[in-house]
Length: 449
View 1 (cartoon, helix red, strand yellow):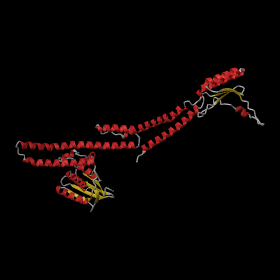
View 2 (cartoon, one colour):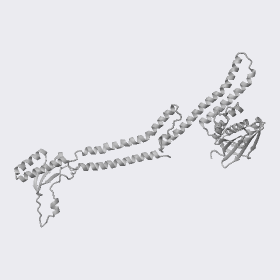
View 3 (cartoon, rainbow, N blue to C red):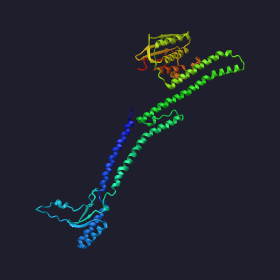
View 4 (cartoon, rainbow, N blue to C red):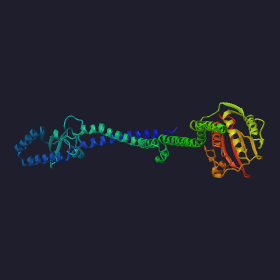
């Protein structure tokens, strides 16, 4: 079973899902990382406040510094102060240089800010002396992460939606492209273009849709052949019936005018028999072509069947020499007595028709592992190599055949091949080196096997 399309779709969905989760995780981490820092303009504002506080502190005007701090707190709705960082050791403790270099009362403006703490952090701008600090609680307007909820909404909703839409587009295009080609081919076929094919348009693709295209091509080829065969059968049948119908019409006209038509009666009877046989053979051929039945309901002995047919042939063609090389028996099971009988009768009549009086027709049957091979050789003129397969086409008759047997219709061998095929066998023609034509049949011992 071809499951290439199934695995393609599964692989696409799995890869797309993995890429989606990875992208959401990566972008979520990066977005949160980038949003954890105070914006550059706000950093500059905080640093400017620190410089202003340091200038006022160095001027020694504490009143001005106090007034500025109060104004800043009211304006930004926050807390601000200038403090010293004297940390005196107790009980003989000592302070390391590392501690003194790294100690801060607040946070540097360039550090990351935790986005999930409710309280805003205290920012620390250290003065030049290293012991005095300007501290300010980060104003709410400067707190980073203001766009984090929107960004998370985009990552959780918009991004998955976009990726899924993209996956749907990819899958849709992958599936619909061959289906559109198949739809266009079906429309062309329904409009009468029976030569349209789809598989070649799909290139190296090899999945369920390619198999569907191959099936369509097989159906189109088979249906096109059936339509052409039916048209050819109708055209040939109408052509073959036109002449005898014209003669019958003339005879009826003569009868209506009171002319004695007794001498026409044998010819009319012959034309009626020929038309009946032609119509029956054509209908049988059309049934075999359209239905392609498998005829395998009988068991028979091929030698007994040949003996009964040869007896009739000897009676009808007393001037021909019929030679046989037959085994004692050739049992065949799961076959069709009627189909093989009609096929062999048509083949033997064809051999006798094209063999001159006094000529030989040789029938040989040999046993093989899984069937029987029959050779029916005649002393006729043979068939041009280019026509060896065409003689099995309905109504085909070469110029030489029409000259030798003008009464034939060209249906005997066409029916024979299709009847042998329906019984599970094969039939082909080949010219003999010494002259004449050989029709070679192969019939299975048991079609089921």
